[in-house]
Image (cartoon, rainbow, N blue to C red; front, side, top):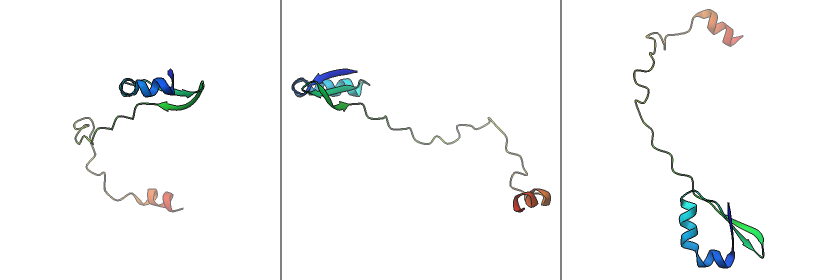
Length: 77
């Protein structure tokens, strides 16, 4: 983590933003005391990829059949 004073941050702001975008964290100090932190934004997550697990598992044909009475009783009691 790099620490810079406010004057240096103003002078080299574009470079510091590029460093933060590349993953660096920069602390900005005033009179030697940290007052702010420049950090990279989280990268947006990718979209939903449908069919990613196709062929990896098998759903039984009776998956959505009604449950047996003894299992239903266990939930209801």
